[in-house]
Length: 175
Image (cartoon, rainbow, N blue to C red; front, side, top):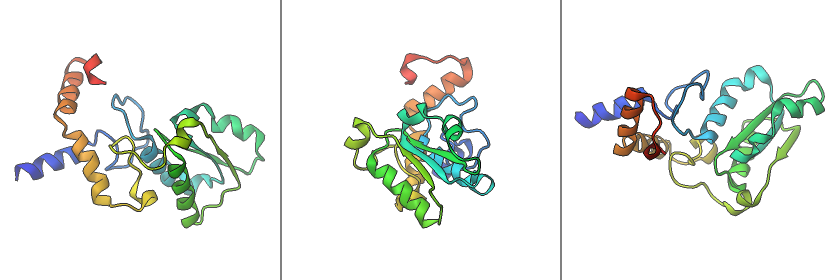
């Protein structure tokens, strides 16, 4: 019973923004989030209204490439979306493209940002910051959610959360 309470509490608190949909994922958040999962969720929440057909793919370094700048060079009817992910490798980019194809999403334009790290990472890395959404990876939903619950119930994470909630001060041990 206690375990069920703890797990349900972790789901309700949702420190990593994976159990519910949010309008703004980064507003006021002090926790490192899984950029790949959030970009997937934002895409799915907005794809019907925006009719994306132009995509930027890459690791978090690709953030330097802004859709608003790129759209200046695209025809007016095109709508772009940035599909970035922390520590993204060529494998991660390829499964996102396969996912888009599987849902019938047309890709008219694409920029794929490739650097040394993108080429050296061949598969998703372990941990809550790197795991891909199960709709993209076709891996277990149970394992996906378990990864986030386990990270949220880590004692060091809990202590840092309580410390920050009480004092609103970032301390070096919190990294």
